Image (spheres, helix red, strand yellow):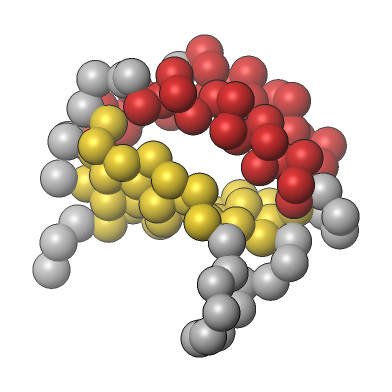
Length: 98
């Protein structure tokens, strides 16, 4: 199993726009072969904060090749093209169990 933590940093005031576009794209990703989890998350009460202009995407994939297929998918690339002007940065950490 592959775990992914993607950090999306929006330009100031643009996080809600990016989240709305993400939520439109999410169902297609959840239908992808090998997708176990694909969940956007924002700050909750307590703990350290990621900030008002950021959100994380917590992902689980059955295998690296399933994640590779997702990264090439039309719906992900359409989402990225739509939100590109609103994005400051994306960081993608691909992880495995220790």
